[in-house]
Length: 265
Image (cartoon, rainbow, N blue to C red; front, side):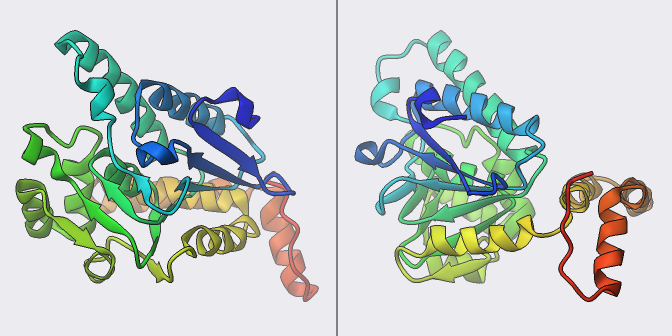
């Protein structure tokens, strides 16, 4: 996956290939998502679903002004209803690929994460934000609707009352409020979001990749069902890790007082 494959994404890998950094790359447009970027995101995260080497994704935006300012309304200005819907199908599919990426996705946010940009951040597993970060879902102020999961994900993360306020009013939420509300895991100095996210990604990448993938799956599906069913899902995830070489290596390394070398097998 070379950067040349994409028009509006930069995709890079760590030296060991385990950490993939996906950067929304339209800094002059505050990384607003046009059709081409939506197609790039869909293709990129589609590829990541089938990549056995990747263990963590760091998801960020180019420049320091914005993670993503949402959909490109200049491109949308002259669109027919049919063209708008066709574009949105691409955005929907890309969003679902981010949500269901089998490995952890860490959003690193500097500056604005608004509308679809805020939604892309919360489609990730968790957010590292700089003190410059500003979150918001202002779609209703333009007569639009948060179209890639905001109405479903925000209530699950911050609770229904605050999510309703944010969506109904369209007001912006600064980084400190977002941290207090539980929207952001780590609040860091300006310019440090990506570095901090990459550091956390490194910690995750050293852990058993099958165990991490199974944990992500169990949390995602377990949260959406009754507790008894969720416990059964968790046992299935546990059993899937027990029969791996990685489990043997982890126990062996513990007893030999060394760090394990997981192969993802």
